[in-house]
Amino acid sequence: MKLLFKQRFFSWFDSYDIYDEAGNTVYTVKGQLSWGHCLKIYDAYRNEIGTVRERILSFLPRFEIYMGRQYIGCITKEFTFFKPKFTIDFNGWHVKGDFWGWDYKVYDRSGRYVAGVSKQLFRWTDTYVIDVYDPQDALGALMLVLAIDAEKCSNDD
Image (cartoon, rainbow, N blue to C red; front, side):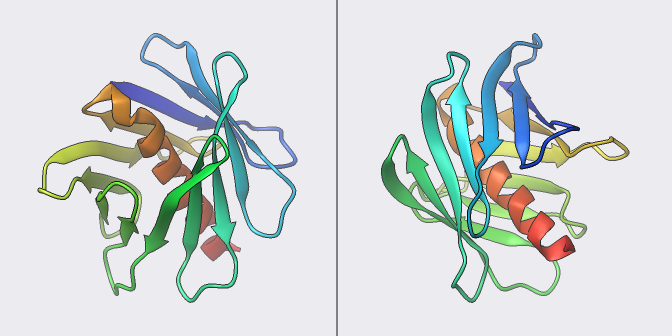
C-alpha cells in the first residue's frame, strides 16, 4: 500500500493531507498550538484517530504517540554520527535512514521489512511517499513520518 504524504502550502501550523494511490484522502493531519510539535491525525470521516506530540525536555528528540486519546509509546531519535536511526518502543520497529536523512526503511523485531519512506525533492512543500507492506501498519508508519519530519524541521530552525 502506498501513501502520498503532502504538506499544505498555506497553513499557520503544520497541516498535511495523506492520499492513497487512487488520490483519495485517507488521513488529514493538523498541527496544534503547543510547546513543541503537536499533530492531530484524522481519518477520512474527520474522526480524530491519533496524535504525535513532541516531548520538549529530553536529551534526544522524542515524540509521544497516542491512538485516540490512549498513550501507546514513543519514537526516539538515537545518537548517531552519520545515518539517522529512530527507535519505536510500542511495536518493536526500528528505523534506518540514508546518509542525507531523506529516505528511511522500517523493520520489525525480527528484521522483516515493514515500510519504506522516501522524500520527494524539489517540491514546494514537504512530500513523502510511504510504501507500507501491510495496510494495517499504515497509521503507525504515518506517525513515524510525522515524527521524523517534525524532528528535521526542529533541527533546521
